[in-house]
Length: 312
Image (tube, rainbow, N blue to C red; front, side, top):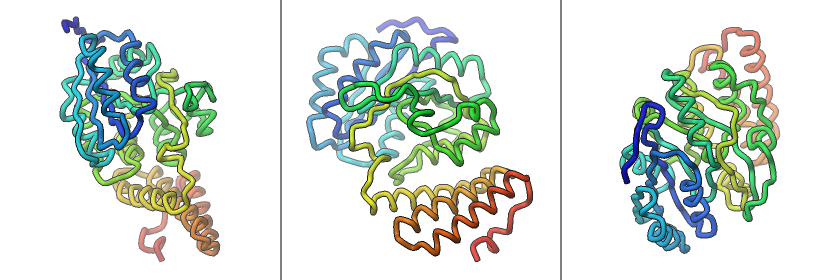
């Protein structure tokens, strides 16, 4: 398909990792066509689905493959981070839109995100807001950031505010992100082996002040009872929290003060959640005391304790 590309209409690769979303994946793909942005391609991998997701994708491409360039791969399950890295490697666009096969895009959102990066050449990525819908597509919330995650959008108006928000109040849900390929290569792509991969990536982006925000609803984030980040299974929640704590500890050296102290505080807060789920209530109290102390040091911009003393 011939497309006229300009500085403001670079090729965008829509990256869609698909897994067991037979009821939703066609709506996701339809929404790519509904967005009027002219220069786009779809790269989609079925990551070992055990339902009819792959069949639905193949049927959709059979109907609409002449309307938008598509590359579809079906293979065994390798996990979300590995799949995202493979999607990025297969993409041809200089900009990468991160999708999800159970969510869908809103018309005009792609142009809004592209325009932001065009107007802010020093930013490597941008996020927007979402609406929240149920499994049948009925709107539950007008703002995923505010109504679902209780975020204050004023935090996203500055680099310091974005660092604070990414560290202490993770409020990004759904396919709201547009990345420059060059920026993704700079931060070493997704860390394979993680179950919840996005916080790790955004910590690395925020540490470099590479992340921007546009206050626009660019996608629909679907809650359907099987979202991995919304599980109520205690052992799984503990596993996810332990992974988040490990990610935070690994990314501490990337941050300068006072953001490093704030991330240390968050590590203790995550530890308190883990201890609560494990019914270790004395440890909850200790972790919360450390959290409060470090939050105060961060607020007052005081030097934090030596990491060895903190561990003791």
